[in-house]
Image (cartoon, rainbow, N blue to C red; front, side, top):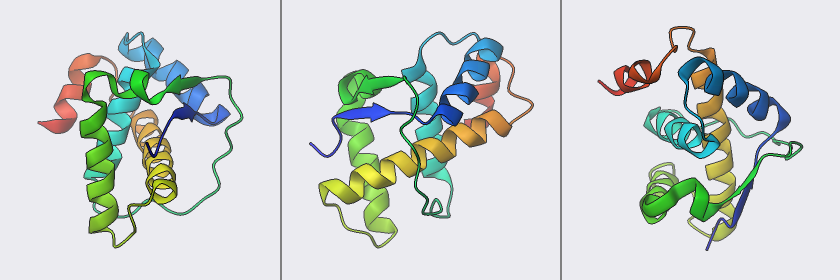
Length: 124
């Protein structure tokens, strides 16, 4: 398995706290899934950066992905292939982390995001 545990940066944690408050979504993993998909849908690659794992928010891959964990992993691997990267476990884990944090930033930066319906409107 390329990804066993996910630990967020303190900045991502703070952003998710606000997103949980404004959307009413209670669980980190639900917002994190939306964030991942939002970033994967972006045409550009996320910028390479060193993202600290300096928060106390940690979840297992199974909690993150739930019953669709294999699908999320396949989406990240497919994106790695499309971006001309390898699909070795380290590359997949790194790209997952970059996409997750970029997606959280995108959600946080969307000032029109106030409720669950606004999330759904992002894909409509």
